[in-house]
Length: 152
Image (cartoon, rainbow, N blue to C red; front, side):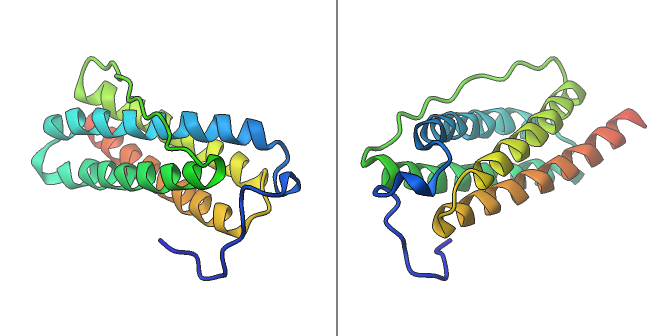
């Protein structure tokens, strides 16, 4: 996803962020969270009913894109590649997993909203907006899957 406007130097002016250092820390954590989600959704994907497996696959593929987009943003901000560390998400069952995914997606959407509001740089905001809206879509998908699992 390339922005439609001319790129802005995002390393130079700290006034473009409410708190640049805090933003970079949140960005680093977000990259790791997205990498963790990819691993989590790979496991969850195998447990999903075949009819709805594409819902989980869609979220997993978006999360892989988010890792790339956020890593590129981190590199532009810091001049360094992020140290990506995917964690492990514990869940006891498919139903537990989709509830965990639902809650995680809502938390992620809030994080990206807050990060979006903490910068004035359109190029950065574009990445955050894309990621935030994807997370909201994933939450809707996992809510649907949870409702199905609860009613069966």
